[in-house]
Image (cartoon, rainbow, N blue to C red; front, side):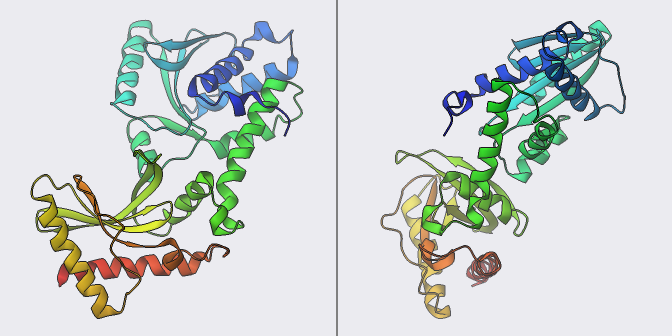
Amino acid sequence: MKPNIFNISTKELSQDGFFTWLLQWADPENSKYNKELFNCGQAFVKKLITKQMNQEIEIRKVETNRQLENIDVSAKINNEILIIIEDKTFTKEHSNQLETYKNIGVDWCTRNNYKLVCIYLKTGSEALVSIDNVKNKGFAVVDRRELIKFFKEHSFIKNDIFQDFNERLKSLELSENSYNDLIIKKWERGGWAGFYQFLQTNINVIGWGYVANPAGGFLGLCWHFLEWKDYRVYLQIEEGNLCFKIGKVNDNRRNVRNEWFSIIMKHAKEKGNFEIVKPQRFGNGTYMTVAIIERKDWLGNDNDILDKEKVVKKLKEYEKFLDECIKG
């Protein structure tokens, strides 16, 4: 493939740099250097403003900052509008970032008589429940698909930086859509992310995202949380196995785990669900896998193409199975 700087420099700081660069092109002083990039920058600023303000403006001046009070990117427009941008690739909000940054923006705008626009720019993917939380905190979301559509409208621009970023976005989208037509054993992390996005529109997903562990981590999706005694039990997909989980267990972990395992296996035997088996080894953390279903038994064999309807039906059957374990 043609070398692409954004395939090499994948950190959020590089993405911050690109969006700051694009915002700078919106300043009329830069129209003399590249009229097409200037028009694109202007269109981008207007797009961000209209995400939160029903206002068409003429852009006369743009000043940008990076990491101003830890805000990824900010821009002052016409000495009257402040845009703050929280820029994410594959991570998500943490440590009350959005509340903190919005409060900083509100305070600054109050003192300087500006209007505030808060943007959450996301080029990776994130669970719907997480995105809803972002919106509830007063940030408008601009996601990858929206960016791809925007850049397509300006695809005639002959600039390597611009084209490289555009190609990077399209390659991410292609990777996440790969679960539709690749055989299952060839799915990579992007394919699993795309699959999880499909699932969250068909089952009541609580969340999905990267889970770190000593083996290198995985993308996990969890759903169908129920109460059993003083604990929560639920289902989780771990880029392969479908797991029956329990947590948070602080005390008597072994006894609690073994009791719940016995209930699951007893019910599995009664129902003829012999695909539900003991994991290779039990963990002893606060969140534990009690039983598993291997990928081939719920998703499909290695050389299969995903059968979406069949898989959703199976997952709903396992929800019902978990319900019955609780009742039993």
